[in-house]
Structure formats: C-alpha cells, structure tokens
Amino acid sequence: MFFKRKNNGPVAVSFAQRSEVGRVRTENQDSCGKFPEASWSLAEPQGLLFVVADGMGGHMRGREASALAVQTLQEDYFANPSPTIAARLQRAFHSANARIYEYAQSFADDHVMGTTCSALLLKDAMAYIAHVGDSRIYRINRDGIWQLTHDHTEAADLVQRGILTEHEAQNHPERSMLTRALGIELTLEVDLRESIPIQIGDYFLLCTDGLVKVDAQEIKKAVIKQAPEQACEQLIQLALARGGHDNVTVQVARVKA
Image (tube, rainbow, N blue to C red; front, side):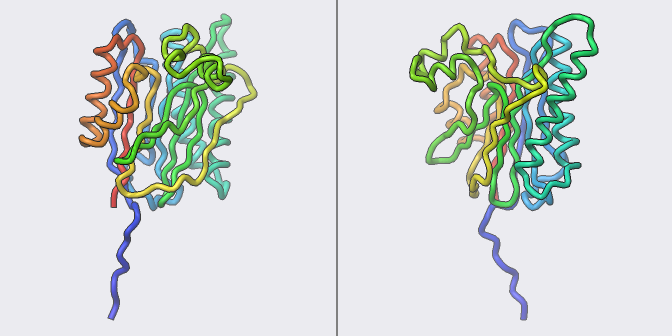
C-alpha cells in the first residue's frame, strides 16, 4: 500500500501586476515582468523571477533602459549555469548594467540613461532578492509588513546616517536623487539577500517609487484583504489620487499551498 505524502509547505503563487502612467507623464518609463510567464510553481528548477524597473534619462531613453533591464535579467538568469541563485542574480544584474551602459554610449549626446531594478526570486520555501535603486520589495503577512530593500537615494543615506528622520526624508528635495542605478557606470554594487524563509500566507509586493505616497499600513491592508489583481488596482488608484506625478508599477505575489 502506498500513501501520498502530504505537502504542508508553499508550492505555488497567485500573481498580478499593473502599471500606470503618472498624471504629468506622457509615457510610462517603468517595465516589469514575471518569468517563466506560464508557470506558478515554486518547484520550477530555477524558481520564479519577478522584476520591476523604473527608467530615467528622458522619455524614450528611460523606457529603453528599464525594458533592457527586465529583458536581460530574464535571459541571463535562466541561461546561467551557476549552481547558486545569488550568483545567477548578481551576474544577471551586471549583464544588464553593461548592456544599458554600452547602449547609451552609442548615442552622440551626453544624456544619462539608466534604470532602477528590483528582482525577487521565489523557489521552494525560500526567497532571494537583488536590488539597485529606489524601487522596493515588501514582504507582507497578517503579522506585519517589512521593506526588504534599501532605497539608494541621497535622502535614504541621510536617514541611515541619522541626519534625517524617516518622516523628514519623505518630503526631502533629494528624496528621488539616486545614488545607484543600472547603466550609469560600468562598475555596479548590487544589494543581495539570500535564503529568506517563506510560508503559506506570505505576500510579496514589488513597486516602483510612484507608490511612495501610499504608506506601509495602507499597502498591507490592500494586499491582505483582496486578491492580487484588486490590490494592484487599488494601490495604483491611491497613488494617482494623491498627486501621482510619477509612473507607478505594482506586482503582488501570494504564496499558497
């Protein structure tokens, strides 16, 4: 007689993403993606990859930079034979950085071309994060909400040094002044977090900085109380209603049995 082993751990995700042009923008410079697109299983050999990127450098340049970041991360991560997830993520970020930098050099002018980029990799019962810029990744469950990334901005650095409070940083003139981005220089420092345990009932939210006017508790409430599709829509509408000058992109993934 054979018995099927009961699986009490997380095995899949439900997922939604939404991106919207800001009130004073004419083009959305954000890009995002989830890969493999047709799979929801945490047992995928290389896991499930979620990415958001917010481009800068003028309308077309910013859009191209963020799109190149997402495309290169997808291609490089899944093609890399390295046995560790962290090494594959780091290599993919460096490949994206070099590709954007080299593409920018093909133009005769001196306009900056770059992008923020935040990536989440879920595999089995673990999460992994790679991050550059001021897009964000949150972990949410009924016990709380935690920002898993550090904003690479002048204002965030002042908070870390004790010169500003978190509240003061929200309205600081250098709140959006990036200290790190893909494509600006050939050298790049990537923030990596490895082997974060996950469980059924966890949610992960990735967003560009257009969501900044929505506070953490509002994010938690929207995500916990609704399906991912409705949560994305509500959060974007909240951001737009509060000024919403910047483009805003939101991804929500729910870990389930």
